[in-house]
Image 1 (cartoon, rainbow, N blue to C red):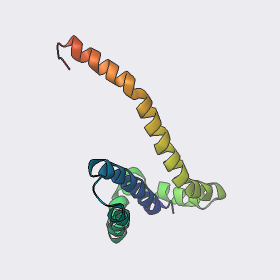
Image 2 (image 1 turned 180 degrees about the vertical axis):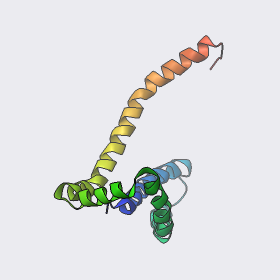
Image 3 (image 1 turned 30 degrees about the horizontal axis):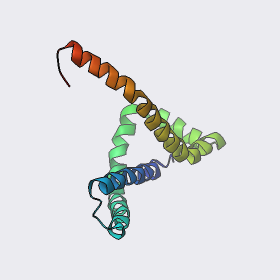
Image 4 (image 1 turned 60 degrees about the vertical axis):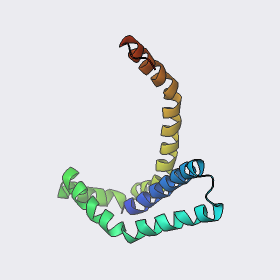
Length: 126
């Protein structure tokens, strides 16, 4: 009901994009035509193995929710708000990932400064 499988596919697509960028930087000699074929291959592997992901998710839901809670979730996801949440979740995840990346990048200078200070305090030269 939550489209978790579709969300995992979206996350895989985002991961492939990141992998492609890294591959392009590491191996600029790979022709663009070859690079453009790779996402479809990765997507095919995900699609072929989606059943095993679904099977892996079942015990996770079982671990965190009781049967009555799962029934209540099903009831909620059947409401207009629950349906909206399901429809909006991919955009929320994508926007959240972008916000998290920006947030983390913004913290990088502070982290570097603190790590450098701690290493210096411990007598470690960088």
